[in-house]
Length: 191
Length: 134
Image (cartoon, rainbow over all chains, first blue to last red; front, side, top):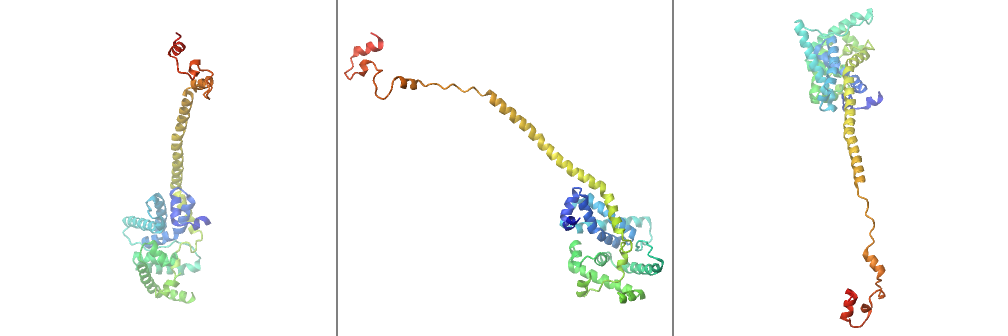
């Protein structure tokens, strides 16, 4: 696995195209969280984001020869994630005309935290709803997945200044939305 | 992660976004995610692996398809040429050599007819007699 970790995307793409499951596994490992973040920014539902991200990996493998610049696999792949997510969202909308709220996996952290987390998720959902899709994508890639803004710019093929601008307004809006809540202020004070 | 952003005047990371990470509480979430993707990708990976191997085998087969008949043809041709080559001609003893043996050229006049060996003016009748026998 160490050898694969050191390999660049281009070599992993080449090996994956020849059916090397370890190389493809490394690509999945490297981009699974980013795929989920981008999918979540589009679908706004955990289940859909999960499905779209998984489908995107399979779709990417099936047409990996179309990745003409394997060094920029991330940008190419995240475009697939975005398109898959939109298609999935379109299908969902056809099935139901109701607005789709952002959801996150239902987990059982313990009775004492259920209420707090439910509130937090509800606030996050509302806050993210006010952002544009690209702002959601950038803020999730940066703050959820840990990508640097330079990485986002490079991988999304977007000027660095644009990324910083989106991130600036996304964070500002999120903070405005979330800071109105007493729990958020407490959380910030306590770190 | 947001230090460089905050230094550039961009607001810091809003609190609570990590709540959206499905692996935050479920530590095995991403492992299961990976396993599911790999399970779904398995048929395609196997197909590609087979295709890559078939391609290599195909190249080897094509190569051998040309090489083996070529080698056989070259061997047959070589054998035919070898067998059809005429036997080497026996070394002919040059008549010149015999003459040289018979008539040394070192000035020895022993073999010459007498009338040729003589320093005298040639007698026409003697020459005719010696050559034609009359």
